[in-house]
Amino acid sequence: MKRHFAMAGIVAIAAVLAFGGFVSAAPRSAVAVALPNLPGGTSSSAAAVNDAGQIVGWATTAAGTQHAVVWDHGVITDLGTLPGGTYSAATGVNDKAQVVGYARIRGPFDVAIHGFLWQNGQMTDLQPLQPSSPRVSSTSSASGINNGSRIVGDSASYDFVTGVLTRHAMMWHRGVITDLGAIAGDPISVASAINEMGQIVGSRGNTAPDLAMHPVAWSRGQITPPARIADERFSSALGLNQHGDVVGQCATATDIFGCVWRGTAVAILLPLPGDAGSVARDINDRGLAVRSSALRAVTWRT
Image (cartoon, rainbow, N blue to C red; front, side, top):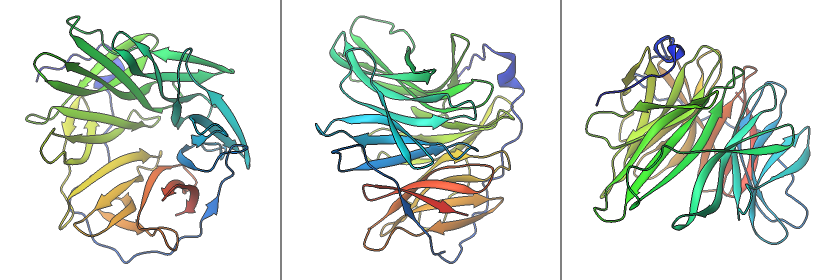
């Protein structure tokens, strides 16, 4: 697929860590710390952490709705929703405390999902690519942001007549949205994280019947699919730091674990006792990872 890179910074993306040659590793024990819920809420999930230790994700309100939140040294703050929205979730945060995520709003087809940027107490709508036809519904979602305010995520469109779904990784910067493209044969690509060197990781995959997703890295304008682990059913790269450490999720036919890649080795992050699985969402430069275990937001020191 032909790709258009509107910003010079895209073509200068540094080489991302080599994913090839996954090495199995013995499971490691985790020392988990539960984060507080919103007043009256019953569940939460952590998604990203910055070097100051600020953690973002979502939590349910007393009314049972899902809102984007920030945990700052144990104190939880509700970020609200976009105007007219019914729920939101935060998925990324940089060292400037700029937060990105997605929120549900009213759209031309009743409801839509749009990415957002939250800063200085205000939530701004990150518009998706404009639909090519009135019969096409477009959505967007923001997943990561670096200190240069470059935001990555995805924009999707669905044609209600043909039933065709396309979903491509995107970058927003200074009001410009750039399509990062997709792997040949895979109509879905999602960018999850970007670091200060412009390294980007995410996932790529297909639609029905198997909905399989696998890690992917963008390097110098090219998209590189990594090798797969043995017996892999699906996996995803969700966060990375300046050292090239990548966290995400690995799944076999029987187990789903959070995982962290360092070079060509992968280590498993065990779920909390009693939980069937976990997912690692992000890692900062100090090795502090955040993850979800069942419906609890937790931290893990790598």
